[in-house]
Image (cartoon, rainbow, N blue to C red; front, side, top):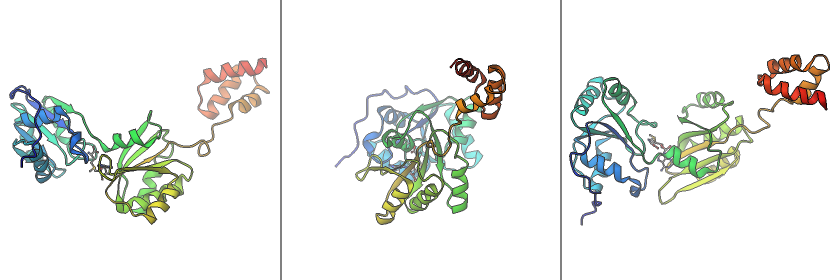
Length: 287
Ligand code: SAM
């Protein structure tokens, strides 16, 4: 029986030479894009993290392009050969799953290709970090993706603490065996922040569970998780970083100085922009 998918019609030879960064599914094969299929089919060479994993996807798609391993240990010579080839024909880069370069190989290749004047094109598609952010219900207007947390307890806590003041949702990749310890570390640092665990996204057992880190740690202690996991931490909550009571500060300063000087004193003390403090100082003076 032939399981190959039907390819979208794209006349061969229409792809310009260059490097095409091609996102592939993170679980559900239906998430491959039409453009990704066309580029993989039209590429003269596909650089991939693991030839067996890429081979499986290509077989499913009925594509027979040449494969070349390019993982984090690839030598500069391997990269140079790929870049050289990309001057003459389209070369695709895929990782085992999702978007290459996002906690996956590809950064050096892209940097060196660009420096060598070779065109680099992105063929966007699945990315677990973005899929998790989209479904977690945490603020999505500002986020910081920080890859995998360190394995050792102290290094993990230090890495988390270094992100304490970031006013954004933090997104990490995590593994099932380490999830509980990471949640406990987060619970120690930020007991009140909302945390989300997005697991097996796009797969049969997809789930996204949110709550405090302590509650999630308790849940996963009782139900050891399986599969692939993205871990998200909501931005600091008010109790962690109390906003300065600027009115009180301004009133105290106004008792001894005019609005201009009072605004300057409070601006220096709080780091808040002087102009807005001055406007408020004038209002308070008039009250
Ligand atoms: N480049 C990939 C991307 O764009 O998402 C990520 C590669 S990274 C080596 C693999 C990690 O991504 C996994 O350990 C897990 O943390 C996360 N991940 C990948 N697929 C996932 C999925 N279906 N659900 C949740 N997390 C996933």
